[in-house]
Image (cartoon, rainbow, N blue to C red; front, top):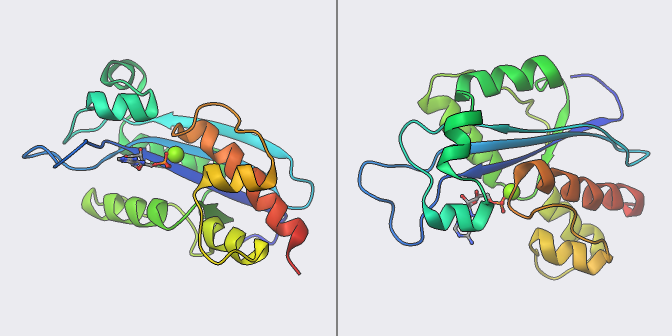
Length: 183
Ligand code: AMP
Ligand code: MG
């Protein structure tokens, strides 16, 4: 683990459905949003959304409504899950830094898919749950969603909610506020 001011923020999007999962399909990662945050200055030094082709599910219209991601987009621009993980390691040295996500979902989902696909988990074991960190730092009685956290802080939502590439930038702002106000 490097001792630096850098924290990586990860936000995943996955295939999803309105009701039950269609037979034979499963939730799979379709976007890995990542950014590199300087915890002291709040500067985002790098940012990317890696689109991933699902192999055991298709993007439903419900999923497109939620995320704006279409099956066509993934067919043309998506890379394999294995390639996406290689990008995290090569471009972000993802196993070298502390990382953060909004809640526990992203950690669980990534661990599950790495195990299922026999890919080495690409992140460090040093994880910050920003949803918990924010509730604690702000002294809230319960945890709130990312949108609500931004509203509480009077920070406008940047980009498209439920797009990993943009969600990470908004999470970075919440996390930076937590670092400034943590004592
Ligand atoms: P998020 O990081 O909040 O954009 O959500 C990550 C993933 O969780 C999405 O890509 C969906 O697969 C799933 N998800 C989030 N919100 C919902 C929702 N309201 N209904 C169904 N699935 C959701
Ligand atoms: Mg998201």
